[in-house]
Image (tube, rainbow, N blue to C red; front, side, top):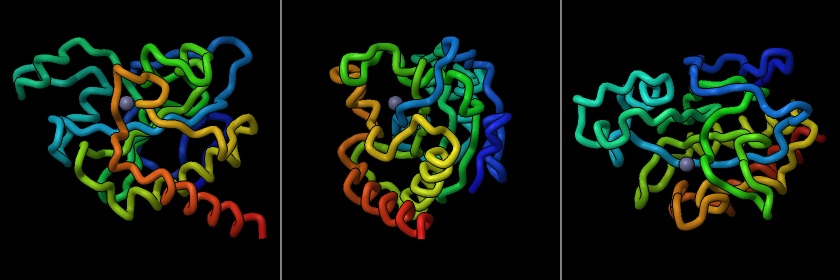
Length: 190
Ligand SMILES: [Zn+2]
């Protein structure tokens, strides 16, 4: 897995480019990785709805929940589907609109300096092995591309927006992810 640093695009990923993004503030580069969980409608996997939400084309009449979130302009840099497939919506160098009102260690506006990766999931449903593997590979590629990112500076949406967001929910196994990432990085440096 490789990221073209000039374009910020992940080689081999499906690209569904979102209009919900803009430039990072001048001189700012990714320093933080934020892990999210999402499913649309909540609890249902598969289907085109996450692509549609992030491209601003979610049909409000297709589900009562879609009517509730009508007009929401959100995106993430990438989504990892249940089978491990990666979809990219925003080039990693640009600012995606994933964290909302947020702060990391007292620093507000996490979208300015972070990369947001969504895992297709739901509270109470464990993520798949393929998702842990894809997230590990994607994180390793991001670390290799963006010098200010660090394996120690990875957080969840629930941590940067406490009281407002609960994803990626307690089902996300942080310890498992950290061990996989450590192993991957160690193997790469040999
Ligand atoms: Zn989130």
